[in-house]
Image (cartoon, rainbow, N blue to C red; front, side, top):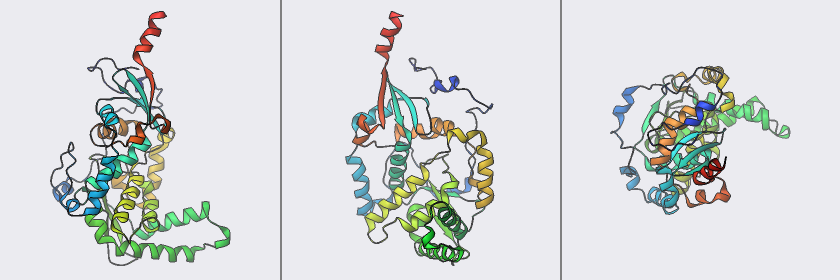
Length: 327
């Protein structure tokens, strides 16, 4: 399980896990329309250059400076020089740095990664174009009705008419903000009225990474409920965190056996077949997200604190070798 030779492939732990199918890591991320790549200039994946739009906004510069000042140089060096070992469960993975084995909460790393990328690529990231754009009101109503059914307060009497009115209110909010959302966050809504507006594009923060579209309805509702639209810096901060929460979600490992069926059902409901990703969590972590952990994320100092259980040293190879020698 431990990689001691740099020539050995990473992710060796995966070969010891029992798989119920013959799916291999050679599967590629779902292909997307190459025409969208012409919309923006090529981006250097190894730089943190601030976009022209962001460089003119003090609020965005302050937000970027905020997470850069929290940077843990030690953890940053550790991630950059680390090697992927394997996935443990729906929140934890294992990596190796020098002679140490570390347990990593990749859900927390994902949130920080996508929050930072949204600000770093402010106004200039590519778009994920939806081939069959769904109606915005259908997505919002789906979330509102599901939430009312599962968590609603019976005393509020949230009937179909009430939910429809709230849905129209939320669509109007996003319609009012659509130019800003499109220009800065690459969230595009096509249409001019509540009944016809569609979700046509989302930001591409990492090439080859597609967010879980089943989480899109909740994301849209939270844009209407959780964003501070009155103050510029607070608006950009809360918007970036909501994008991060949306993008940081990965398919559940224990549900991968039936993931295609589940995603087909979601696809049928929200009509977004162009963005349904059939790639499992292990593949996404190893081939898409882990390279970003090593080169893009600016880890905060609190992640280096073992009491926060984000990055925790589990074993030291020198000690393991001593044990093996005595055996």
